[in-house]
Length: 220
Image (tube, rainbow, N blue to C red):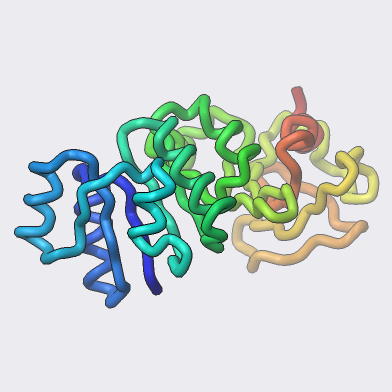
């Protein structure tokens, strides 16, 4: 694949190195002249000095033939603008943006960025696996359909315990896709499946209804 990476900082540098090791064709766009020279000296002529938010720069970088566009600068605004340009002006099929402030994730999704990566959220979700403090863990965003795949663990106090799936007041369009239960193989629930405490539910939901889904399965 031909991949353009915007941002040649530590994240962009190591990402470029890993992608090259995988055999991908790669170009890094970096504003800083010294950083550009460092990457070229270390990795070869894969880095070009330029602003990934500028149309001319993206055109010269061959964005029109790129298979993937990844923006990992330290500025959320630059990552958003460059990904939008790649997506809507050059029709790049897959855009990935680094988010430094987790509060910006919603707007990135609304603006059509295919994949958003927040290091803060990744660390928080790893913590939650050990010490669950939040009702819902995001596993995957399906941007094209406006859907999310999430994991919810049923706590001992949940009002859903002992109820069948058909008895639950699930938000419209939400589906329970898989149940992971202790000492059993994961299984796909049907309408007569009875929920138990500590069940781990993999569900399909939407950003607008995920809170209601969490309340239904975990309680308020």
